[in-house]
Amino acid sequence: HASPAGPRPDGGEDVDVVEVDPEGRYHRYPELVGRGKFKSCHKAFDSQIGIDVAWSKYTADDIHLSDMELSALESDIQTNLDLEHPNIIKSFRCWGDMQHHCINLITELFTSGNLRQFRAHYPHLDLKAV
Image (cartoon, one colour):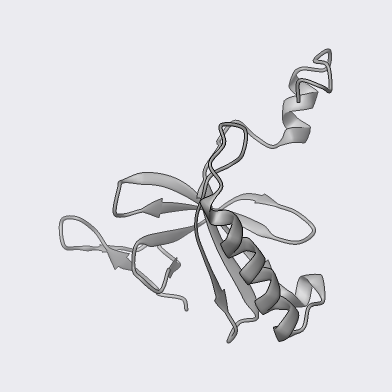
């Protein structure tokens, strides 16, 4: 599950990495991008293509799900990984971690804030545009 450090391209260790996905491609950092009722979202890095991504963690204890329900939710999320649409955030990878009772989801990272912040910045924007 958690790895204290990950490899850097120069062969050294990246001490800011707090977790690496099972395949070793995505490296999660401690920087929290956002938190909601059902998940926490951290900044991460895709070491294969060299871009920042979002690493969301859905914890079963926070959303009161059994392991069976958590597995069903993971299956539903897996089904949506193939969606391609310009108005839908791209999801790259999803996997369950039953030892820690959570689902991990890697998506595109948007650094312009959340929807609430966007609405506050543009108060006169028609809700249909959002």
